[in-house]
Every structure is written in C-alpha cells, then in structure tokens.
Image 1 (cartoon, one colour):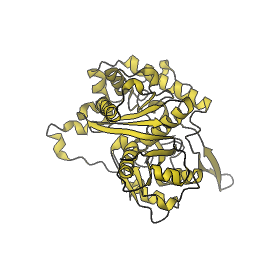
Image 2 (image 1 turned 120 degrees about the vertical axis):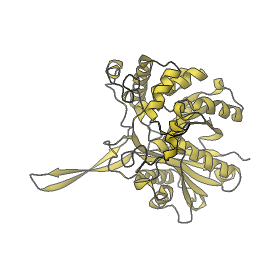
Image 3 (image 1 turned 180 degrees about the vertical axis):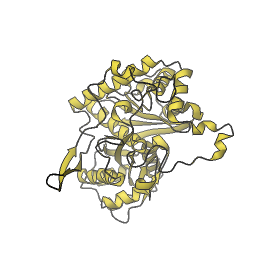
Image 4 (image 1 turned 90 degrees about the vertical axis):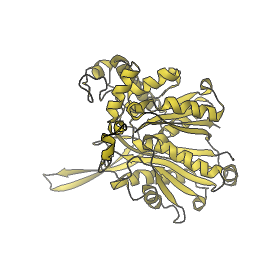
Length: 394
C-alpha cells in the first residue's frame, strides 16, 4: 500500500439554512467553486491526470441530484475525461469520500483524486426531497430507523445521563470558541470566499437592483449567545426533553474539497502535502442511539493507525447534538481541551454530506498552524453508525 497524501483541503463558508446567505445558491455551484479554487491554488497540476472526483452528499436528490459530483466537475471546467461519482453515508459522506478516493489511490488504480462533499439544506431538506420510508420498519424491531434525529438525541441524553445544563453549557462554549476563532482569523486559510448576488426590488423606481456580496465567514457563530439565552429555549423533540434548537447543530449549506495524491504525483508536480490519511473506520450501533456511533468507530481507527488516544493532538467531533457529543466524550474519556478547539457544528453548522470534508479542512489547517502531529475527524451517522478518520500533519 502506498501513502496517500492530502495535498490541500479547502471549503466554502457555511451558510445557515433555509434562509441564510446561500439560500439562493445552487449546491453544484458551491462545489464547483471549491474545485475552481483548488485549481487556482495549484496551477502546476495537470488536471487531466485526476483519476476520479468523489463527492459525498447526504441527500443526493433534486438540486443536488443527477450525480452532483459530475455536474460540478464540468461546471468547474475539469477536463471531460475526468470521471466523477457521488456517494452517500449520510453525515460522514464528506470524509467517506476522502477515504474512498484514498483507498483507490493506495491500491494503485489511480494516482490523484479530488474528494469532498456538498450539501444545501436550503434546497433539499433533512429527509430528502421526498421522504418515503419502507413501511416494514414500523412493524418490526427496526422501527428506530424511523426515529427523528432529535428523538435519538433525547434517548442518548437519558441513557448516558447528560443533563440539560451540561448540554447548554457545551453549546455556549461552541459559540464562544467559534466567535473567537473568527476574530483571530483561524478559519481564513481553509475558506475560499464565495460571491453571491443579492436582488433588491425598488418599487419607487420599478427597478430590480443587483448587488454583489463576498461571503468570507461562517454565518452560524453568534457573539450574543449566552448560557442564559440558550437555557430559556424550549425542547423541540420531546415535551419534557432536554434537546433544544440551541444545543443542536444548525441546518446549513456548504461544500469542501481535498486534493489527494500518491508520492509519485506529489514529486512530479512539485507539490507540498499538508498531511496524509493514516486510517479510517466506520462502525454500526443501534439506530435509537445513533449519536453514540463515534464510540465504536474511534477505537477502530486508532487501532488501524497503531496510535493511542493521547497521541491525537486535535479532535474534530461533529456536534450533531450537545447530548451525543458529550456522551461520546464521556464514554471514551476524550480530552475536552483537544475537542473542537475552534467550536463545532452547534455554532459553525452541519451541512450534512459536506461536514466531513469541512472538518478535515479545519483539522489539517489547525495542525499546520499549531504544530500538532495527529488529528481526528469523527461523527455519528443517521440510522446508527459512526465514522472516524485520522490524519498526520506533514
């Protein structure tokens, strides 16, 4: 097996759904933008040598259907000869795509690939364009497949004794860390700003005015968020529950892309890799405790990498819900100071299929800035799974 290097990884800013800055932006345009940006950053690459474009999308329907990976590749002016495919493992799709492309490179089938994810929850809501469950799940032991994500978070909060107060404190800290990171410019290196066109109708002049606006920061972090404000929010999934809109991840829009290559290609194009993929693992758990998935996936990824938890310098644990994130931290005794040092999905957003690629950008750029060696991207996955990827900074 050959080493697979992450040459570079970048992303769009993340917008809030369904009424945020990217509400009128098509997901294939978001993805095409990241590919164009990657091309501009590495002009010495012969882009016809890309062996595949692998893109994750959790709801590959409607505006992000029709093999969005191929559509975006063509919109980004990649050569027609470069193939592309869209894959789906729900919330881990963006990092699964990196692992899938890396495995193909490691086997020697291709030498270089683009891999990442895209999701517009403004265009295609959670559950897809047309949610249709198999009726059998309502009559057998797999009924939990039909549970809403929020209900599974409520179950996890009770099973692992995660209090409402702890969840709200965690959510508050997520916003504080994200706001501070934005002020310090810690996300700037990983973000490729995206220009939108806003339309304003002037009734007095009977005219439509167009105004361009450059989006360069994630829309979710709120400086005015406080524990007091979050603690006043009502539960949204269970009448006497603890999970609220304030301690849950934000529905979002965004895209991310990574350039992967083997050692031969790195040398041929005089590239300087940011890191390499060390290991990747997925595991299943009961659907009703979906959020606990990383508890099973992380030990597998560590074992494959030949590493121990204390060797990991940076952990990007997707905050689908504060309840599940805290349960994972509690069960694995994760060092809290290493978990989401720049905030997580509660503040920064969770554009489903793009999140894995976006958090990969954060961890590799973060390791580069701080001098860390190993980083992890991990998340729970709808219907009861968990994923974890370990990267080494170079």
